[in-house]
Length: 374
Image 1 (cartoon, rainbow, N blue to C red):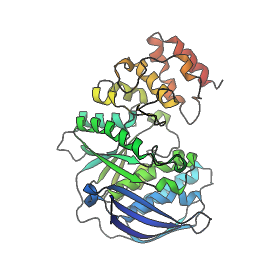
Image 2: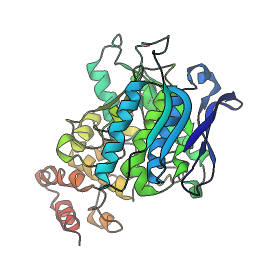
Image 3: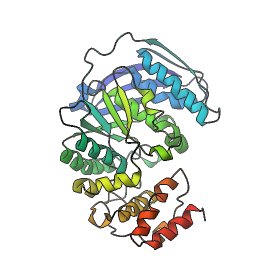
Image 4: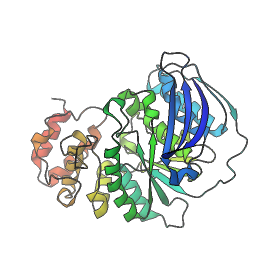
């Protein structure tokens, strides 16, 4: 793979882009980009680390022998990428082979570092809401770890799968809900747009290997604005498994002037739900659904919606949330989907004692039944 033609442009948005050329496969040449509104253009850095980090997983996936980029890369990031490749080889039982990274090495960090400004990826789901809430409860505003920017990214669940379309109108609608949360928390919501996922639309690759690298790519692209980037954990320590975002993986995408932090590993999903239950604005604008249905933040029918609503039932919080039309969960709502795939089982098992204590044996029974794989 060759990464070339790095450039910064401004039109409707400020954009950094690069050309990606595959050498070992028949994948087409593609321009990848990261964009943000022009008002944040001065914060968007033509940082080669963003493109190297964003492309390394597809390069390995397509059996490229090297990544060549004629730019200077921080040696600490290069060391981290060695670990990333070793993890990928281990997680795939040798299918993903490490490749050579051909580049120059930088001898210093940015002249404006440190910036002492923290940001986080913000989807509006349980994990990112809990991360923002914990930050506000623990960090004074004068601390460099205090989150000042929340980055809402187009090109993940919205606009990430090409055949489903870009759905900018869905993104804009979700952005308005997310902005209510960040305004209440005293943080700035910054929209970011990227097409890096389009290098490979394979869903398993995206979820199990790739998406954390694209989050880190966004962080490096914004290194003129922040130097600490939080990624909220999906799983607690007890239930870790290989995943596109992982505590062994995400920090390896750091450089000397950009720290990537995978946070809140001691918090289970139900602990996070109980935490945000007390945050009215967060509860009313909680966004977990990938269906992106018209006129609703959450469809109330998909696996993620039903799972989250069941968690809210377990902590007596569903009826107080404005994010769902439904005010209860019934066993028949579990019929359309499986719950014992993609390492979802831990999220359900932790609900059982709480549901039993609340007398919801109907939900305990259906969850236990579904966990067995029937």
